[in-house]
Amino acid sequence: MGKSQVELDFVDIDPDRDTPLYLTPHTLGYRNDAFSVEAHRTVESFFRYFLELIRAQELDLARQLFAHLHEPNETCLGVSRGNPNGRGVGPQQAQQIFDSIVGSRAVQTGMVEHLEDCRIFIHGIDKDKVSDMTTNIIRGSLIKYTQQQCFLHKIPLRSDTATGLCWSRVNSRWEEYHDNMLVINGAPILLVPKGIVSFAKRFAMGKYHQHFVLDFLKNEQLRTNGPFVCASPATQEWA
Image (cartoon, rainbow, N blue to C red; front, side, top):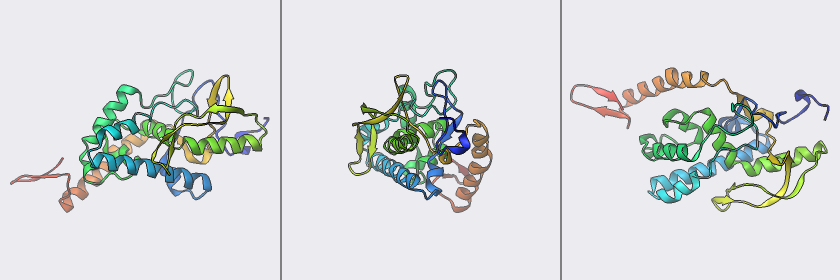
């Protein structure tokens, strides 16, 4: 198109390899543009329903919902080597993460209320996993955004193309349909607003959670004798 990244509202990706950026639901939560508001509501809808099923012990239904949070390749974001192939939630890893969520005291006691909370409380969920989950959940919003940007920049779309599964807030279920899609080299591509991504510095945030967030939560639980405190006659311990 002859335009630089500064001139574009979306991330200027290379469709042949991943760009080291992550999509985060936290960023969606504090932005007030139409895309972010709509996408954040969709993420909240999915996760609220998912937690309701777990707490109601409707585990088969919850597992079916979670099974669709696979590794998305359409955004070409992440830290894969070579061609985009996803590093997020594969089938075996999805089962392990699901088991961790179901067995988490933080989920059962209500301390986990938002998807981004999982990064702090659930073993095995980090920034790349949350990014992949978010991408799957807001796929419908990303499709609409991609269509708008392609119309603006006169980029051709392929009609009657499968969208992949999108989360419906209205029906509380995954739905798939056919629509006008951006297709490059035979693969569907989703454009992502550059304002909702963050740099993939893989270890910095993990250290922040490890040394600051968890220490703060530990002290608060001990101070208030919260649900994660295991009391004994001689002392109180962090569970």
